[in-house]
Image 1 (cartoon, helix red, strand yellow):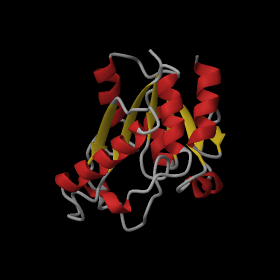
Image 2 (tube, rainbow, N blue to C red):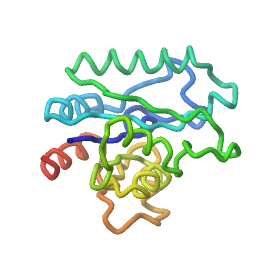
Image 3 (cartoon, rainbow, N blue to C red):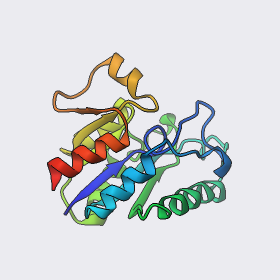
Length: 180
């Protein structure tokens, strides 16, 4: 199966230190929606795995999160793309849950839901914890330099086989060339 796992904030849309709390605050990074559409049209299934601790913090509720994701799905549809599955962790780091990245719980759920091993599956993120969650299951780490990506690169600690891409469009192009 051709599958790609994407983080949301900082990869698909601009991130905010104050959290994305409403559809109005959700703004796609230029080229990201086209990149997802390109992956979809190349036969890849696209899953999103995103930490959303703003829920447990009381900064947004499920209705707001659903409205944000509805906006993302509609915007993506305008480019002929789609997200096949969206997984989120509503917990803060203090909850010590298994679903919050860098722990692999969300990605284990993606593996189970799609009935596939994640070995070699591209897992795209802008933070070390995004990449660590995928690497724990053998996924191919892909760092994008949008969002927190440049800071993540400066801080180091990346797995030796990490692909480094300017943005999701460059990552999608490389994924299509190397994984098809």
